[in-house]
Image (cartoon, rainbow, N blue to C red; front, side, top):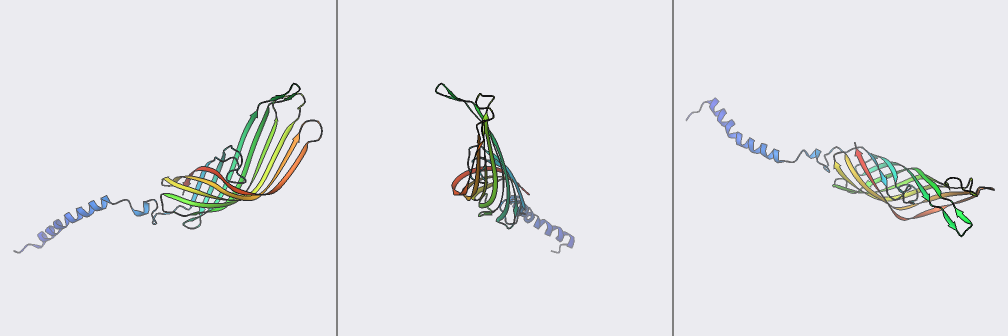
Length: 242
């Protein structure tokens, strides 16, 4: 039977319609474009990462010798060099106060209440290598070289007879290299959380202590030397990648 050409075209198009519908449903069931999936090799990788957080191991955790029990604030900027390798620049600052109650020894010696402050600033440069750049949890190790300055001051609260002008000042300057590990987890695209800790350090430190009991010249003592060891100085950071 002869079928006119226009009708044959309509029938051919109709026969292809079910195939097109099936293909469309298959595409609708596919995940988003691979370039938008976290961890996909085709995804556009961020070149910069900016983070801010809290170091829980003390004011000098992350730079210098991890000592003390007061947290400090940290700010870190990272630049990607290769897919797994990052260049790091970090700064920290910490401040704390303490108050000690007075004490009495026997019937003649009385120590007044004491107020003290401690402050720290520091900075470091380093590199971080990511072992699992495409995994949901990115495990990495990092090493930094930095310097820090920590100063403390203590003095009697109020006016106490026999302790006028008494004070105690201490400072510590440290240059150290550190080794640490970190785990990153992306919460949403461009925003993630990092848990890290220092596991080892080695460097040089110089400490100065000065005691002034009022009358007479203050007594000053200085010490310096190399240091190193194994430690745990954890920190937590919220990071923005772009």
